[in-house]
Length: 555
Image (cartoon, rainbow, N blue to C red; front, side, top):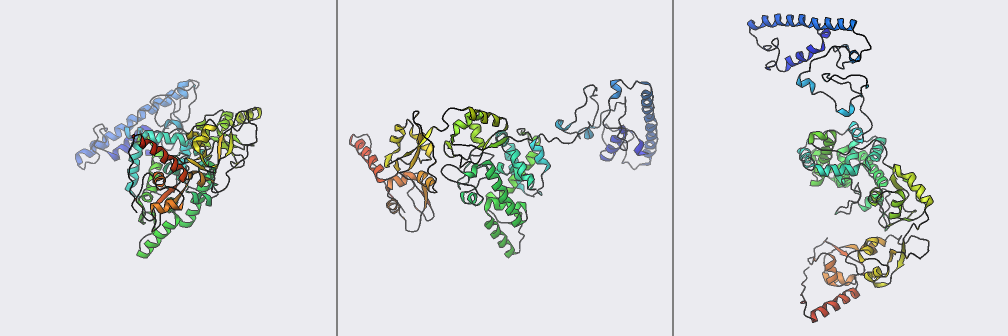
């Protein structure tokens, strides 16, 4: 009998079980839980009366169905809720009353509602609109559909949720940067059968900033350190850093995560190993086994950063699942490729490549962040990434181009030659020369490097790559010296042929040494540079404009 009742009765039946003492409940339900015999009989009589009254609108609806023409648009309107749980067919001309508040809340977001034909008149009182399948036009929804990591019982998740919720501008900027890369990452994650939470990992690592660098020398959206990057095929030289390459770093990161998952059999542990190191996680597990403790992620003793790593990712997952719950907005990302790869046939300036593609320099560098120098070597960068709608434009402009593609040239500097003089010779500022060649701000004299300088307009030459040797980066930007037992400031300075004052200046004035400390040794900081500075200081002191300062050193 209950299955044949109209739909308008069912909400009250459900409400009767939930809250029989509601003031707005019908009289037949007001005293449902009362055990007094005085209330039972009126309840039964009223229920029969209500059933008899329900027959009236049903008979009227049947009469209207027989008399109203079928072509009337008002009659053609189908009520989505149907006439009962066992019969989903639409009922014509029967206007349902609004469902109770608890039922009316069960509706879908607007973007997944199926469009109704224009000729139909939609009643504002119709509840339960017809739903269609979730669209594939949004990458965020695609990610939500692939979530597969198990929940983690950690208070840290709520802490990170609160932080993101209190920084809506940060979340919006991050999602805007992600719009360039996320489709490709999700494609690769799904192709490998990995949970789509992995696609959100660059949010934790770099907030999708391709130029991000950490204090541990990690770089790119996946934050690879140099040694791990080389292990997974990311070339790093003076011209190019594959750790910042979008395609290469993404493939390397997913390869590494797959390897870690096979090793530990658990995504939480794999992520901990990605952050902390696989050997460190293995040692922590061995220590727990020795003590008879569990070896899962929650039970391992880890650094604070690793303890927060998975909870932070799960907090981002929860935000992506329902950003409105946290009053956050995510940039809409269409479910289609953002970029396409093209192969350059010859070297060209980064700026020229951006102009040929008719995109801003910022947009070009965001898609091709691996280039360290202002010139792209066609044999170093296998592909250039361009927005999909700019690929044809780039090829057409390159074909019709009659201008110089490279406006830089190599310059063989002499050892001891001042960088300021070189910059002036080629109409550059000292900062431009340093930036183009990756020189340290502390370096003043050349140690014989080959430098990249602007080319003269009238010069005609074929650009050839240089500084391809492995130590080119070290020669330009210096290297790190680890302090050993027995080292002194004066001893380190003598070892590398620099003055004590220069060594201290290179390291932000640090004079206290301890074993394991890293000191920066810059090229071009020879005694000749110090002698030139000393002459200037002596002249200034002679005129009385400054006073000599005594410097004390401690081990």
